[in-house]
Length: 116
Image 1 (tube, one colour):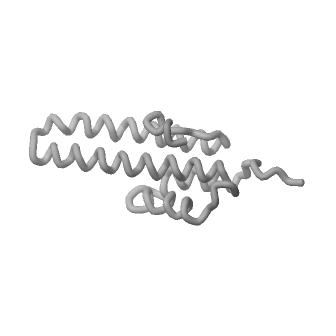
Image 2 (cartoon, helix red, strand yellow):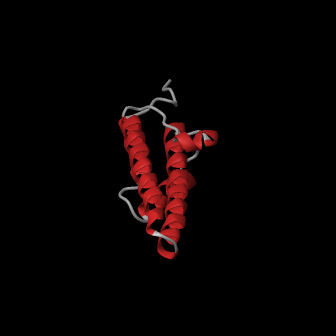
Image 3 (cartoon, rainbow, N blue to C red):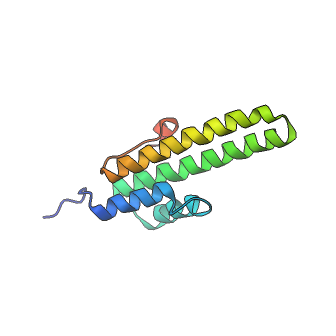
C-alpha cells in the first residue's frame, strides 16, 4: 500500500511554483489561491502548507509595500528605506522557502509561524 505523505518531485515543483507564483505580479497571489481552492489539505499536506504560507506572505508583503509606498509619496523619501528593507527581507525568505520546497522540507515564514 502506497503511503499518502510521500513527497514526489511533482509535489516539490508545485510547492516551488506556489512560492514563486509562477513568476511575480498577479500570479504571486492567484496561483497559491488556486491551489488552495482546488487541492484538499488531506491529499497533499506538503503542497497545501506551501500554498497557504505563500498566499499569506504575498498578501502581507503587498499590504506592507502599499502602506510604505503611500507614505513615501505623501510623506518623505525616508520611508523608502523601510520599504526596501522589507522587500529585501521578503525576497530572502521567499528564496529560502523555494530552497526548502525543492529539498522536500516544509517551510514556515518567520512572521507566519502561527498559521501553520
